[in-house]
Image (tube, rainbow, N blue to C red; front, side, top):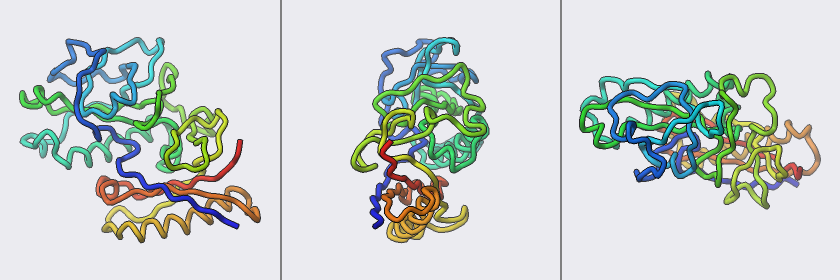
Length: 264
């Protein structure tokens, strides 16, 4: 008997900026409202609350010290954003395309693997005051968790190439609980009941969004087969799946995540 549990995601798992801005208690005065591009390779002690904000001026720390975030990409926004509003929806789409590709390259992983790691990325833009002064840069940070995490795990001196080869369980994502939905994602080296084992592509880059029902049905069918294969086709197994909505589709995501119940 197969049992499937569906989990929808309403905000990009790998993109920050879903929440409102707010004061950073650990802010560096030199970074607050700065129009200058951030430092590439800088490390910080970011929290899940930090990655829910559109801008960040947290103090940097030496990468040999304890840190939960590393800046892996910075740059000027394309000229199309010169007169854009601060919350232009195209900014999020640009960030998704840019930061996600750079994320894969930086970690040494493909699209499927980065959706199954406890690591994620957050992107930041200038503060609203800096934006009004003409600042148009972006910053992409790798962080040791997701916005839904209670805490971020510590990163090594650099996360560059961290997912090359067969990554250890401490960097892969699992869940402990009766279902995937509503439970915090944890590293797979901790006791867990669900593991993200595969992803499936539900559309091509130029495709129009087929609707929630079609995405869920396709996800369920593919994940049933995919998880069964991953578990070497047992007679009975439970699987779950995470599928994404139109907003994530518009940003560029075309994959769903398949979970296997492992009881480990």
